[in-house]
Length: 232
Figure 1 (cartoon, one colour):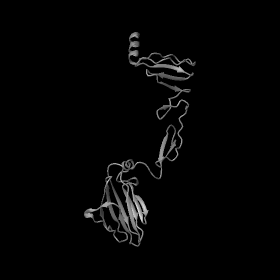
Figure 2 (cartoon, rainbow, N blue to C red):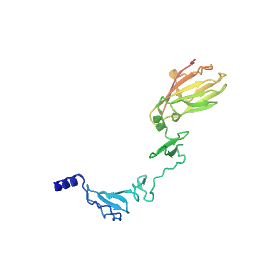
Figure 3 (cartoon, one colour):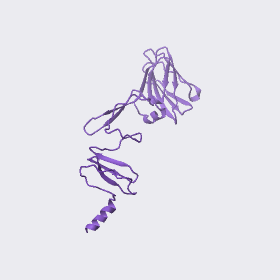
Figure 4 (cartoon, rainbow, N blue to C red):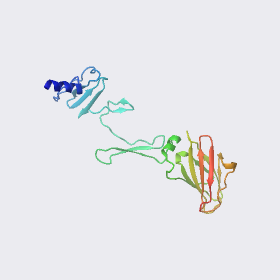
């Protein structure tokens, strides 16, 4: 019966070596075990290690630990995992580690602006996202998918604002822009390179508290615009 149990154990858990822990260091086995087998051994007094048939060693314990890697390369000089705050990277974001409670680690991504790939930003920003306020504009304004798919702006009395667009890197997006007049409703808008129904661009409603809502479809080549006006 004992022999049968031993055979079943070896079938279920094949090992080539499993020395007992004695507190003294046992040398790392030379070479690698046969395919499908593992070496198990004690190293450096209190580190329990295994080695697979590919020769990869994994150790845990007071003097061991999981092998740390940087971009897939073993970092043998690193014995402690330490998260530090990144500098603001090329796309305007900062990664900040924190420890909100014992046994947990949190990485928070922050940044006022995302200056990276426009198509990526568009994919991340749903059409129902919060409006991006361009604020009060004077003679120029820029509409870009990076800032979201719902944007607002207020004209300056007496100024004609020339609006330009940034096309998405790939695919197409639809952007809604809500335009409001100033207290003195004499602002105008020129939409650059936009194709309108019938080839006629709408004229901004000359009324206070009566915004016009413009919808633009950008497909990487053309900009198609429609307007719903004089909401009050």
